[in-house]
Length: 322
Image (cartoon, rainbow, N blue to C red; front, top):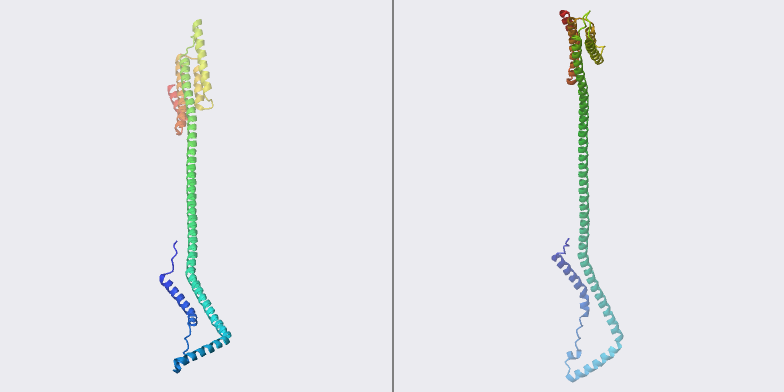
């Protein structure tokens, strides 16, 4: 920061005013220091001869000397009176010069100090403004950081919500898969049950439908009797397995068991062949109903009620066949 000096014109005016004040203060001293003019001799003015004039001059000189000796105290007093104004005038001149110097110093130094103080205040204000700007910038950065943190927190919340939704969907999918696995496991077991029952019905139909009792009055050989007994034991085993697989509280299963018991009764080959049809009819009804149940569990479709309809259809066919 530069300090501007006093202008040249203003400085000239100040110097001129100081010189004028110094001259005014020094005039009384100059007037007192000028020598007094010598008085004219009355002898010369009288027009006397040279010798007379010489004597008169000598007489006047003696008289002056005598008068000077008598007037020494008055001369000393006059010198002291003259010296006093000289000293006062000198002090006046010095005071004027000192006042001029003080005025010059005041005129020059005061504006400079004022400018220095103003510059210092301006510098302090500028530093305060810089500090305020830095604090404002810091506050803005803090606000930006807080906004970024808030946005990051919101993003994290959104990610957490998305993850929670994905986890819920995964749980649902897992539950669905588990349910499907259970359904498929049950369906597989039901399918195995259907296959086993179908095979047992076919075996019972083959063993009991083609079974022939020995004709009355004909002696049966030991080998025939042994073979017939083995066939009977095998048929009993198959019938027992069928009974274990069926639910006797269900109408189709109960009717199938009735058909098996009817087929076990003694009779001719023709009678057995006619009875074996009911075994096939009710076996088909039971297997069809169980298959419909498996398909409904796998697909979610409604299971048709076929037992009663099949029962009437089978009864009708059996009546016609009789």
